[in-house]
Amino acid sequence: MKYASNTPQDLVTDKGNMPRRGAVPKFSDLEVIALNLAQETMGHDSECYLFGQIEDYRSKLAHLISRRQDNDRRKFTAALCEEIRKRVAEFLDGEEDVFIIDSKPVKVCQPSRGNRNTMGKTCPEKAPDFGYCATQALNYFGYKLHAVCGVSGVIHSYDMTRPVSMTSNT
Figure 1 (tube, helix red, strand yellow):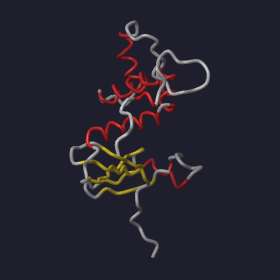
Figure 2 (figure 1 turned 90 degrees about the vertical axis):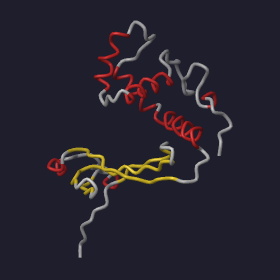
Figure 3 (figure 1 turned 180 degrees about the vertical axis):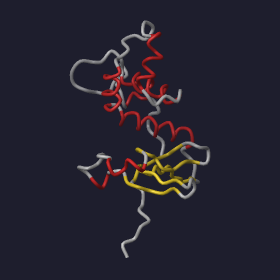
């Protein structure tokens, strides 16, 4: 299924922002997404490090936002970023009929700290848990990342789940 438009005009306004009430931000939503994609491409998982690196270019980046604003806007634009990712994946290889499914552990913390972890206490079905990855011979505390990928390597979809407990109560 091809989208009617491969341009973002049906997703954002002419200034590159998602439709919203109030003042129009000068640093657009598309610029926020581009900044965070650049961060991921450079392999930085810390926005503190990224903003330290681009501080030298602040005069050349019109209306650059602060780290706090970046975090807020990144959450706000998550759905837009996901929709763009889906459209890019479809554009690159939308006609594939062979897919590969794989999973890998995503550690939240060391297993020794797992019992002290407070993530997900209000929603236990979404909380991280202890798991074992046989291919890496790794005990971990966290989640399992599942990805569906085309033969050409483009990720079509992904999901995070709790690891399946291998212990039985019999």
